[in-house]
Image 1 (cartoon, helix red, strand yellow):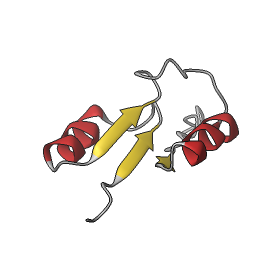
Image 2: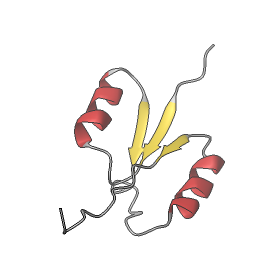
Image 3: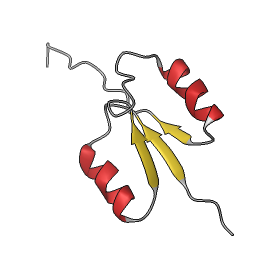
Length: 67
């Protein structure tokens, strides 16, 4: 039997992506749901290595105020 795909998405990933993955039967957890807001990517990565889930982080660069 094939293993189920598991992802952990950080707080910068749009909720529409989370819902779309779940509709397709993918096991998704998020940083806010796991009370991990403020945890470093490294901390989150280590947690999800132990859970055997893939971790996706979408870093948002600050806007350049001169533009």
